[in-house]
Image 1 (cartoon, rainbow, N blue to C red):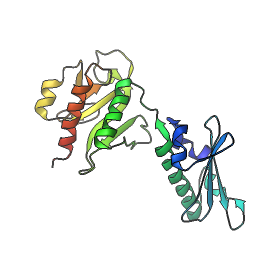
Image 2: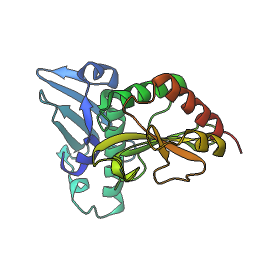
Image 3: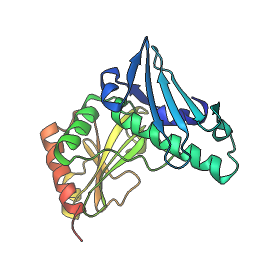
Length: 225
């Protein structure tokens, strides 16, 4: 994918979802075509049998490929616009036909599914230098109500052995934080206000029902002024 490889990082293709995303089967390959709105160029996205994604942009006026948007350092406003348009199309394809593979812990996957079903929210990955840290944002207030990350558990407590884990940061009242934090199941918040947030390792030591209740409380707090 070259210039667009980061869009597909940590993503797994779900072939059954490709038709709904606008793809048609051509032999052993899947193909999607659309006109880019500003340039009017034709974009073709092809996914082969092993999941490799190829893009081609055609200038319909000349019937020739356009490639300036693929340069490592895009120069010129027009080329930048074409790259932004192709990026937007590929991001939409990922949203419709791929599954995020950043988090693998069973409890994390159940938590993500619960949030999707209950609140209709998807994790937002806001920091390119921290691709394994995502947040859930309350639709009304735009405030965070949860943060999921992958990190070394030794960062949570010096008594814990070095091991990569997946964690959830939750908003809570100061009284709840004081009552819950025990450095075993509940920890002082990682990289957040330790008076108003706490951290849970997503390893099933805290039951899903309890976790979902805490998340619901965090969701409500995120909508308070």
